[in-house]
Amino acid sequence: MQLTLLDSDHPEQAFPPLHKALKEPNGLLAFGGCLSPKRIVNAYRHGAFPWFNPGEPILWWSPDPRLVLFPEHLQVSRSLAKTLRKGRFEIRYDTAFKEVIAACAAPRSDSGGTWITDDMRRAYQTLHHLGIAHSCEAWRDGKLAGGLYGLAIGQVFFGESMFHRETDASKVAFVDLVERLSAWGYRLIDCQVRSEHLLSLGAEEIPRQRFAELLERLCTQAPAAEAWR
Image (cartoon, rainbow, N blue to C red):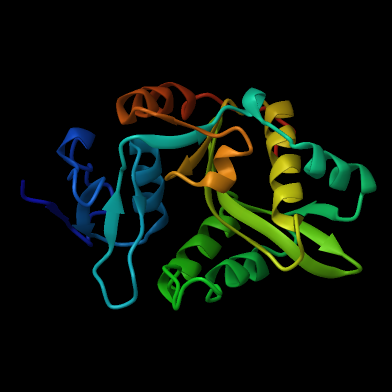
């Protein structure tokens, strides 16, 4: 099956139907285009996201199945609950988005590089300035200990990446975010691809078609007025 080449000059161009995504590699849907806010938001609403390595063209993915978390299915282990009760971390929102995405982009001990290129960082920082991308941060003793970032569209939060510098910092931030999103009326959290870490927190895999149907309904529904304020 031939992949669709997206036009970089027309960010409003529609993505191909999700069933046209490749089975191997799982979910590769299209390539090219641009990282403009309109293109990225269109991608997420359609069920796709950008993911590519430095030196590669922009690649757009929609894997099947899709890992998601329904906020009401959040699972907190006994050990994590103990950490939460200690109140070791202060959770803040949108106070250090640039620092969070930079930390997520830093090379990990288990890999030699990063998929969060400079162009990706600039694109998501622009989305943050537009009020679409958000960060959740765990602070301890005035230092950023962990956190995550993603996009909020309608009643869906699309998680992108997380990091930690202290044990459980990103998990504590994630739990706080899920509880906050639930209170704000969010119905779905996109976790993209299978992760044992997220499965342990209650995430589950669903068919791509069901995911697309949920997006079609939930991305047009507004969250609570106090969300992100």
